[in-house]
Length: 602
Image (tube, rainbow, N blue to C red; front, side):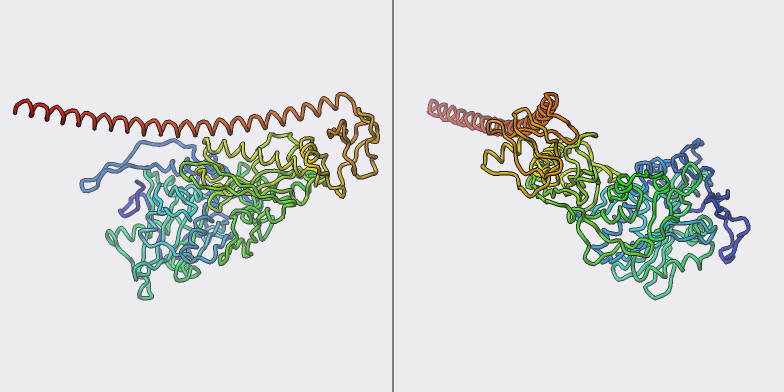
């Protein structure tokens, strides 16, 4: 297990804790270009994707006579474990999840902000909530690897690994302050998870120094679990490797927590390959952006600028945009504050045009009565912007934003966006995708079917040519397309049936029929309705038919597989009944044989 520093370490040389200034002259400063000077308390390589590249030396530890041998976790694992987060915002979302889970314990806010380290004036990332906080036991469980107390269906976290992976993905070091009131006892605890400390001191096990205080009597009284020397060693290690060089500085960090809550401070933030901080705090005073994304040159065209301004693109590099969509249901008594300003929650389903609600029963064994409700519609910018996809949530948390279930270049479905909560499939460890399974594959096919069906029935509402199958269905039912809807103009040339097409300057007000069957019109830009166009339309219809046939066959196959399972279960029940009947028959035969023998003896 990961070691908690309850023993002395000979590798740390401690400054006097009463010397609040310390040796400030040797501390690094942030340069004008955003780069960092070297420091003994910093890693040689500050780029996250390169920080795990180093040689592992021989194991130095041997258990003492009174020390139990235990499984050990090398510090290199902290880094490799954090690489599960490919996206920095995904790591931030994990920490927001922890705060949101604290709503069950009375939390009303979580604050995310940039502060500066007192030690070297470098930026650090702050998370502060007023939840129930962690007592000493809870702090140790939080800082240990692979432990989770989240068993409720209402909480988002589940692996007990999210805190470690997310903090280590954002920075090399994290210090946690927490206050809690449990069983009539008020406590405050400090824990330090420092990759820098572990690397710089050559540790071959993850050592996490922690100190605790009893504040029930309105002053901080140290809680000693080992010896006084152990407690002092932990304190000195924290003061040496944290942004706080004195005990007074350390204790002041509890002042903005209140009677209960948790404060997470991530420092020595990772740099990109150019030696600049990965998180961009400077572009927007009310936001945190991903620097690499923000520095991408934008296209000059108006359409491209509008596409980049849409939230489907904004959430990729703006934390405020991402956080606004991160949770499906709007909070009643909880706020996310980003750099001092509350995040306004946004559900894109509220802005969709021509909404339709579709229900889907996934037939999951773990959730037999599960019903997935999907809201579909066109974005308000349709058909101008080619944006499409499904926003898929799990337990209220966004997992896949704007998931495209159709291939690139497939124009059918442009402008259609869906929103659904899929609690019957499991998210991946980084909560940015779902685990691949048969349930996931069936959901993907079902969403594709929903999108294509919605397009057929609604594409004419935003100016596209009505779908052929939709027109036939309308004609069969004796209905016509709404004459007030303005479709895309077509060329005023006769079609193959000899009937006149609408003019470019007119709205499409009539449906053209051939032997009482609706026929396709030429798209804009075609001078004549050629046989090639007819063949293209037929080919498009064939593709749609094949897709629908494929979905129907998959659905039938799924039904047959389910029926096969039911029949196998029924066969097993019958076999058990036959076996039970044979056993009873054998018992009866034995009884009869016994009675027959008794009768012969008499």
